[in-house]
Length: 260
Picture 1 (tube, rainbow, N blue to C red):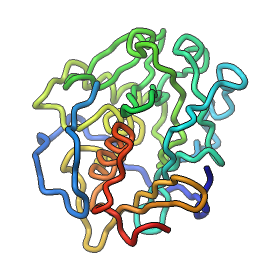
Picture 2 (picture 1 turned 135 degrees about the vertical axis):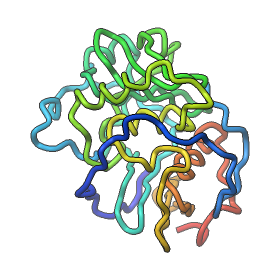
Picture 3 (picture 1 turned 30 degrees about the vertical axis):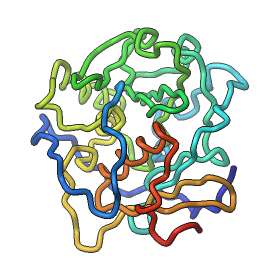
């Protein structure tokens, strides 16, 4: 599978994290996309040159790649904000025990399996992660959280500028024990990404919608088969993409312009 991806750049700003969550997820009308399946979850920015972990090695050479894993790219207006493409990403996965060898505090970890949305977590230290699970912000051991799934470090997936690793961990720790309905992230990915980038767009209903602002999600089914969906918020885009991961179904009614 491949694609013709626009030149990837990262945004020149990052938003400082808020101290505590505000608002509760509402069942709001979604514009531009029809939802299917429930929201139940079992649930880089290229690293700046000063990042001391920018050159870290994978836990082992030649880890497997899930053959049927969908590939995506996402844009806000014309700027790439998310990329999951084999041509420019290391999408190899590793058993949790091997993955631990590559983890550094503040890393985003993605645990994957076919036919379910990936589970995301923030690596703290000493084999522990902080994550959103069943409506609660928890600290658990990576080996227990993985439940046999393969995983990878996903720091480069979003193209926003990352916060310093100690602040990423501080963000995650500051919400330990928080439970629904006070949790204002709709899934583990949004929570983990908020911890790393500090952008309010990852919170449910927290994005200030500017006139004409649109997000585009490109689903790369093959080199010549790319479907584009449009959304008015990053929250909506993430939720829909995770539903496609879980179901394998691309909702045709939500396509904009059909195939590319």
